[in-house]
Length: 448
Image (cartoon, rainbow, N blue to C red; front, side, top):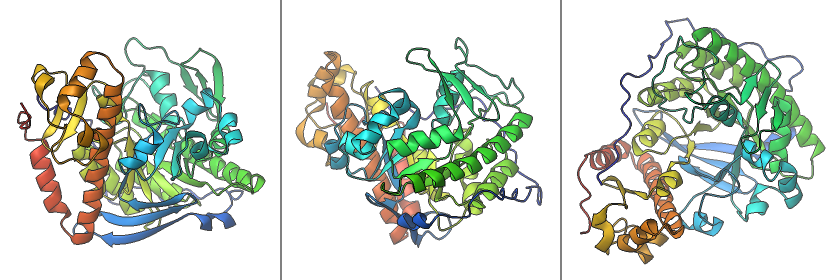
């Protein structure tokens, strides 16, 4: 089969640029929110090279479990595992850090289990840096049935603020104090508040955590986006207070950094206000999240990069396609994560410089070349397309593992090359070459 081209929605949700002077100043931080914590010096970020003509930059994030050279792709290990891949293989394909999910680990096996094990890294036998998200995305996606944040289709910005995907049941309900939600595993009811999220993430023990936020969709009205933004700001203050309290009460544990999360959908004034509000708080870094269309990703990341402090890292939540990666880096994102490399692998899709192809095609039955000629990953140096095609057709789970290793290595290597190109000033040339080859729409040129 030919390359899977990027999604092309009929019409992107409209951006709402702010008029000059329209963005409100930052809301003052409540007096009872501490301005800093002495242990924050145990985490750090240093900016390296900057790319002329863009916001792209290199840098180094310092954590108790090692450094992350940025820009960097963070492998997603949702349930304390990168799906179908061992932690040793994760290190082998060059991932510098792993991101797990607080919501899923809270439900199973329980954050208390990870705490007793000595934290996420020890629990899953991963010695490098770790991230956990707050659970806010799962509350939205599982609560309303929408599975994507980036490139959500059929947007109706003036639609119902209780929008639920067709055929789905609402499993979560938000109020000013937090969220009630039903477990997708057994239907049990649970309560997440900023304080609960902080306690769960402290128990999980990741090096970098995210503040609990409300993730809206592009279906929500402007009025609800404003209401939600203020709710997320107040939750951010509560997260900081609880984070510092837990840091003191767990003084024997390594310091865990806390990132604030920027919301605001497609609205420039709301995005900029969120950045200004959270920049006034003592966060160690920031996550750029929320509902946005693929076509507007670069513009929105750029708004945030212009407002956020230069000396703190910016993580863009949930991207991995080549065009998104280059756009995010160019506009100032330092790290990003996505489940796509392993998700598409489970459907036999694999990345190459010439696009994404699917091993289910009959042409691969006798194709005894590697997934990608010249690739240095474990899969490509040991196995052929024909063998992995056979595994897929036979429904052998090893196919998931082998394609996942290759796909993760492909994305990690591409970001490594982009980082090096920023340092040498050749980023735009690299972007033009990679985009030109990957999205040319040509048939797979390799093999039988």
